[in-house]
Length: 119
Length: 108
Image 1: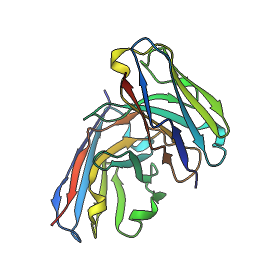
Image 2 (image 1 turned 180 degrees about the vertical axis):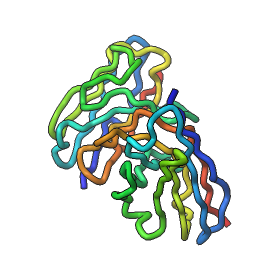
Image 3 (image 1 turned 90 degrees about the vertical axis):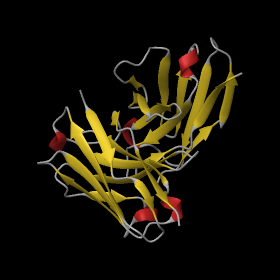
């Protein structure tokens, strides 16, 4: 059974940092694109970042470029999102999602972790 | 980058009725790489349709997708009580990936 379990969310002040983690199991982690998708309270889905199987390609939504870094550790079956210089508008539930082997539609999602940026 | 516009914003229907949801892209979606998701309150999204018209594993056949190029449609042939939710389209044919803003299907 495919499982994606996020952790690391919480309350942080504007300008602060957080590192989200996603523990994957039930599939060959190193064979799939992985992504972070977020959802602000009461709003729609917003793709945040993608990373290729070997970490050689990474893509970001414009609003987080230079502040967020996506990474993965295939030996630990884990995906990460380092978030720096956080803003109030980054407040959202952050989902870890498994892409495909060549494309990024999301068959599997984690349960999400809430990040709240507030003073 | 491709922008997806979903319509209507809200669809008010009764159980048993047919629901037709639209997703329009600002540019042609490569290889019909268009997906549909269902999301219920407090839950993660669930993949319904990929490749514009292929049902994901375990999705009932009352859900169907169609379209190509810039115009796509999700049809729910007969609404069941569990189908009242928010639906999102997503294009994954070009970078960056993009979601539509969602259509809420509510009970009339």
